[in-house]
Length: 260
Ligand code: COA
Image (cartoon, rainbow, N blue to C red; front, side):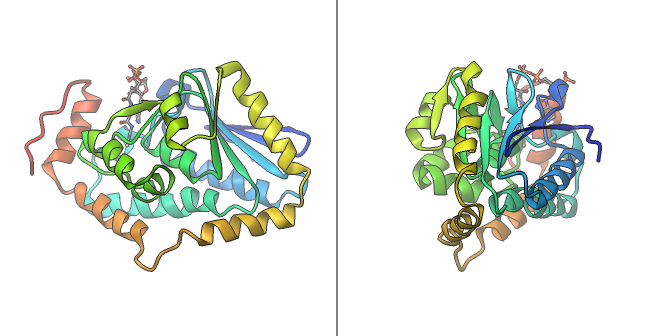
């Protein structure tokens, strides 16, 4: 299969999957999500592949978010569907993949980009990386699992602060928060990711698959926060604040929220 928005490499038993829309800072549009799903499904079936590194093309961004231009005119129903389908196709899919997926965060990981990194089994960052969930500055909330996975990784208070301020944290702070496991200069990021992936590839693939399943099981609760997130995300699309927030981004100006 040929892909337009991602590229795939392989070294030994380790596949490197690169999101490649550099002119849009690798923003996740639906076509990219679809391609990532297809490619990860194939890699999961491929017995030669034992670990996967996920990164972004270029030196500036891992992924700068969901593609704002694509969803700016969505209705509440379309917003709900965007979140529900994305969660199922990519974010839950990555988290539950039977092979280790390491995020190599090589620059901005914002919104859907940080959500994707958080769905991976763990994260490494280059020292120029910046992370955040800026959705409320657009009049919307994280819809790809961010309201659930960020508190799991950094604790509720830090997640509340990050989500409500819409701010970015640098790589050192992300390390301090436990959001990433290692921070290295950009040139060392992929070598470190490959080294760790190769170490994992020498272990039992069957046991690793069971370990992933068991660790993830500890985070499943009776109230489904992901569904609550989808409903709340969809509801934002019916607000004037959402129209103002996304329009202001696309018009490259500061938003002036009407508060309704
Ligand atoms: N969706 C769609 N397009 C995006 C995007 C996104 N999430 N993030 C960046 N882009 C596009 C820009 O619109 C611009 O396209 P253009 O050249 O056709 O105008 C291009 O990528 C380069 O981005 P630009 O904003 O010019 O780069 P910058 O260095 O000035 O700023 C960021 C970098 C990451 C701070 C800025 O792009 C940004 O704030 N992006 C949105 C982040 C966000 O809110 N993500 C959450 C979405 S839910």
